[in-house]
Length: 239
Image 1 (tube, rainbow, N blue to C red):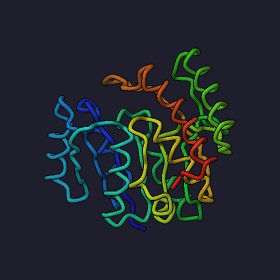
Image 2 (cartoon, rainbow, N blue to C red; image 1 turned 30 degrees about the horizontal axis):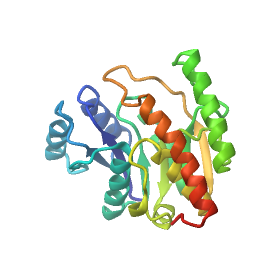
Image 3 (cartoon, helix red, strand yellow; image 1 turned 45 degrees about the vertical axis):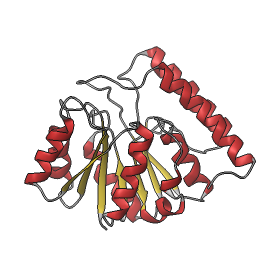
Image 4 (tube, helix red, strand yellow; image 1 turned 180 degrees about the horizontal axis):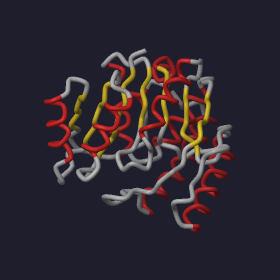
């Protein structure tokens, strides 16, 4: 099974090289795809240097408009173009521990279409963040499950792996999210496509280096996007 680990990046210079080297050590047979939104801090230059020294590292430099959703869309398409049988998506800030990657791939090999790293199954945790943020996360997950009807514990997990067939089924070129709401849009699409979705425990660790890009505006946009997704489904406008 050919696997591609894709990492959307924006200003992740403090983390990228160490993360890529960890991934290559843990799953040496995997291709690492860095999808960079022309980071002003030199993240793209670091990615290019790593790719020059390792044929298993690829880089996609995106021109504006930038955005987590647009980078995710292009990352899925590029991973499929590279021939991936399994596409694993993760953040660059070490909140997603790379040592879980083999477990994701084993679950795909054993029949799952989608595998989520989940804070809300047995063995998962979210204790590295403040109580207020944990409460917001629980409320957000409840809201998403009710509105979208997605039967998973962690609807906000961006650490996930897809079988090639399910990604092709949802037509990633038609993804409409510009920002982080791509996480919920893709989850909603694969659920409606009949995917076998499994969750594995994730001990979430907040980033140590760099700054979070998820502000209040992006959060509110994500909540409105969830309502738009539901409305589109009601009126038969989902691809």
